[in-house]
Amino acid sequence: MKIVLLAVGKTKEKYLQEGVEEYVKRLGRFATFEIVVVPEGKTTDANLNRQKEGEAILAKVDKTDYLVLLDEKGKQFTSEKFAAYIDNKAAFGTKTLVFAIGGAFGFSDKVYDRAAEKIALSEMTFSHQMVRLFFTEQLYRAFTIIKGHPYHNEG
Image (cartoon, rainbow, N blue to C red; front, side, top):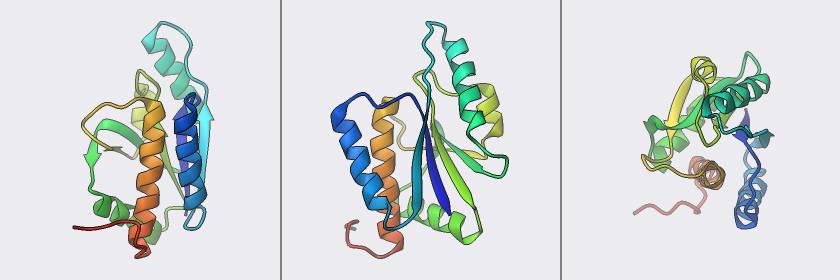
C-alpha cells in the first residue's frame, strides 16, 4: 500500500520541515510514503482560495485512491486504533491511501464530496504546517505499533 500526504502550501518553518523530514525518513522502513504539496491560495477571498486549492487537490487524486481528509470534525482515534485503521486498509487491499491537509480555510465542497471519510488529530485547531509534523509522527507511530517496535510505550 502506498500512502500519500497531500498538503496545501509549503512548510515555511525550518524546525517543522526538519521534523517532518525525520519522520518521512523513518517511515521509509515501513511503507511507501510521499508528501505532495499543492499551491496555497493567495487571495483574501476564503471561498476562492478553497475552490482553487480544492481543484489542485482533486487534480492529484486518482479515481481509485482512497481519500481521507484531516479535518477537526472527523473521527478521532487513539494511536493504537489509528494503527489498526492503517493495518485494516492494507489488509483489505487499499492500493493508495491519500490523506489530505487543507489550507487555512479548509476544504472546498467538491473535496468533501470526493472524500471517503474524515479523521481528526484532535478537537483543537492546528496550523496546517504543524499538522504535517503531527500526522507524520502518528503515521510512524502506527507502523511501529503494527510491527511491535518499542517506539510506542503503553502505560
